[in-house]
Figure 1: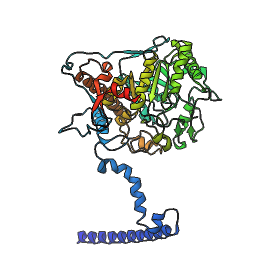
Figure 2: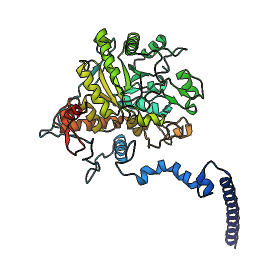
Figure 3: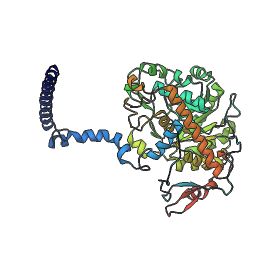
Figure 4: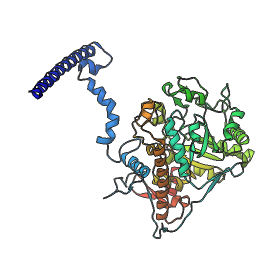
Length: 495
């Protein structure tokens, strides 16, 4: 009997709750119906009250579910499932092989295929990657045998644990980490990795009250032994003609202090350096930074109009080759960012497949290719993409989003909203709790290790001992006719 009493009591409680919920739901539906019919801002809601709300819900959730249920392996943008899957598996150090056959359309125009040799290099022999020195005539030149590095991502755009994980991961991988334009934070220094300090148009961390370069602050940054090179950002692939954008919601007290800006206000960089009006000014700034720091100094830009690079070469010839930048980081309209106007991201600047051969050929023609090292960046997340860049003429590559995937990025497209579900691009401490820097740093190191490993495997298949020995004769690119020609013939035709 006591059990029956408790059972009946439970039924009564459940029935009561059901009735309460039913009436609350009914009231909510009636409220939504009236609200939808009275409002005129959204026609769908007005014409289809209550039910029309699902349209906006599905539209919002579509970006999350599309990659899991609807997109094929090779069709999603900006990165498809096959690309992300390879990075995830490399970062986790699990099986990277695939079965049955390639899902890539091998006859699609623009597809690059590497020409295997009848006599591949044995993977069992010991081969050491050639080291390259940047700025050999500087007081503190920089040498590295690593090809793949971590591209510019600032503290602010990225969270504290994300930057910390990248710093430790870069140290484990032996590659450099670019600070991005947001200044040098303690989190960049935690791993004691090699750093490239980026001087953006706002000069965060090295600016005076007027927004000009502060020699004293610049020298203080250079005094850190981890800082190996300085990069002057002229333009960025995802938003050429527009400065960096950090929404107010992401400008915390710590970030404001590092950047030297007000808390809780949009951090919008100028669309160009206030000191630069011609190529002579660019050379002046390069040499000013190099003289103060004693370290290799270069520029970063996305190519559109290439005449200014010709003018830059003319200016270098007038002053002497020692005045040239030590490197040129070539960004691409394929590049990514935390926040950018869609008009610029979609429509301005050249993609890397067009701009890299143009820049390489121009510097070769002017006799400056050996002096100015080229760092290619923009969607180079896969070994085959890196191999193409090296064969085309790049000396290094740098990837930002490849390393974001290694951190756990799921391409949720929330970078500009401070709501990143993986904690990578948000300063919401609750969302950051799932990002363990110790675990993620190992994944960053794994990704960079296997990026080099599979890159070397491609080189060995082509019959060369080192990826840096790949040339345009080692790869073919599919034309609109469906026939593939070597890269040298393809790019000659482009000119």
